[in-house]
Image 1 (tube, rainbow, N blue to C red):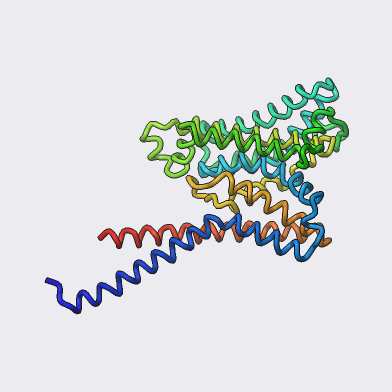
Image 2: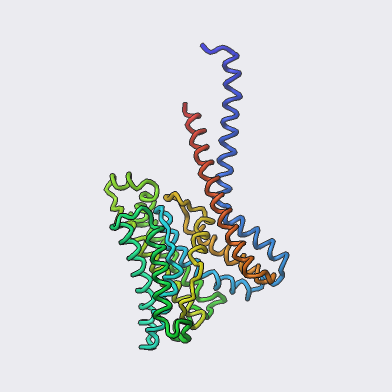
Length: 347
């Protein structure tokens, strides 16, 4: 039978465990909603510094500026869920716009021009997936870095005059550059792509497979999950999203260029990690990734309104990436701490 001193000692320890568990749980919840809270805080702070920020025209401009990052980040999000990364999305987008521009020189059919861009993006994504999965490469960093260079070189070589080619069908400029119901049409493109991906990942077993492969590839393979097929599909979707981004960007600018998409890969990775996804795979929320993309757009817009030099904008994005990675490290630590406390409670 336990004596009174044992009971007295156990009680404070139990209280500390409960208190520690509550604090860790609260910290995890705050990290979970952190992207939205940070976005709201940013909007409030920026609106106090620059009154023009909250004007409808500027808010619409932010949505339009963020659309390309957001739609490409959707594909990047799926890749990162599987413990991967796609460094080729920016160069892939540039090549896709060039293919669309070349198609426009052959025919003024918007359908064929759009299909050319989507096909170009998807083919590059398929190449990434095939080489990574069946080439037994140790990490997708290698192949996607290679295709980044290849796509950039092809875009420069294929573009007329190795530079920007003016002209796009009216239907494409309507998609990328016009507005409807007070919102830029590119916003509806992002909404549509996000809805389709959300439905696919939430209602199909394929969505659960993605999280399983990212969480533990070996266990997923033992469970009979087609790991290679899942990985290939995510890289193809990432490439397709780059093609969709090419349609939006070429429509907004009314042109195609091998210079488009510069550092887009960093913006999309930052958006996904800011949104709470982990480089370790198996964890992430599509809505949070879109919030991360919008956050990058808000920051860039605010820096432009305050006439901050573009080079400092690059520094700001770099700082955001570091902060996002540190938040991921903190989240992993807190989750391990929470599991330790939970295990202690059950003993």
